[in-house]
Image (cartoon, rainbow, N blue to C red; front, top):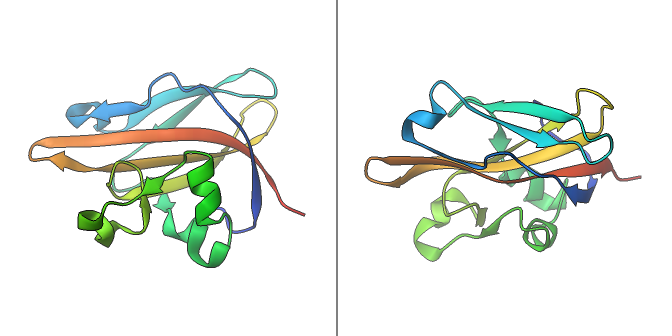
Length: 139
């Protein structure tokens, strides 16, 4: 799990075994698998609430890694509703949104995972993975 600091080009979206985790499903961590687009190897990811990931703002600040338009185009995020703007301009389900980079354990293809985690309503904590996309560093 790492942050991404160089401009990237998004490729295919992978298939994820499970993308929504509720309350105790996230303790101690949400675990799921995704299939590599290049070699079809099943890879495991583990997301620990309040420990995993980096703020999505780092991706679109000054179009450093991806632009807001690209994040919206690929369905990685949506525009945040007016009442939740304190979480940033782009979020997943109006909750604090994070990302991380990961690699296929077999062929080392690079992937970006975007997810949100927070209290959806009183007593309901939700971790939602919007997706995992293959990427390459831009030239």
